[in-house]
Image 1: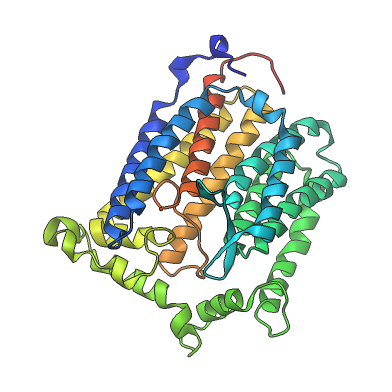
Image 2: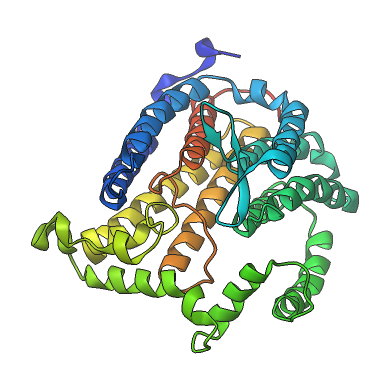
Length: 377
């Protein structure tokens, strides 16, 4: 479990830790701006950051091989939590995604992403010599599809898409045969456009009416139906633009920041709007640069991983961060349909923050073992 003697602590990736400190600190400051009178989300976020770094340290010294040995148990626990959400979950804003554990309310779908990364990494390590078999795609696709479906029906389309993206990237990185990939691409591209057409129709049964309305409003922003649906995104674009080059914070002061007034729930999925208004184009570029370095560091650790298992876990985590950053920025700037995804380490939300911290702990542990010879390959 704790193989401290075989760890090379000179390989403890301080750059990655510093980036997470910077992102979470900036995020906490932005949450304090978004905090409404009577709320205490800033204190919760600060508590989450300190707890998160404790988790990072603990996870970083637990051998990821040891954790992956429980991949079946983790998968079962994941399904139990997601089923409990369906049965006794807390409903907020027409979505049932949370479990009230008396002491704390958690969002199991956030932890599901990490569990499935570990699960898939272990499966693809076991099935290494059989990646040219079609049944590997079908088997792992079904196993990934069950929790993804449970998350989709919460309703949580955005996290379902994260799960799908993680699956695609990981199975490709695991070495899925091109004789399987090419037919999938040839069939998948027209199927995607057909599905995109289908979800816009009145008789579709994949998206909820509210989710369908968001897609249609994005495609037809001039329509009358888009007025309420695009309210958040349109205001987000305006407040980001109001920040101009250097932002309002330095030139006009804290009281000039109005994103929390014009963008509902700006502390979570639309935290980038506050960032853009407060720190301007330069500040937004700094955050994007830090997030890009974080993803690059995860990919670098994947490249130098001591074995296949570590490589796949790091690749899965990098793909998770990559997709969430891309979608969050795309939504807040109006380039993508409105679908809620938190910006890693920056947005408010303890479940999201803990999930990201666990992910960082895993990649740090992989890097500690990068010079180890042998092991699970």
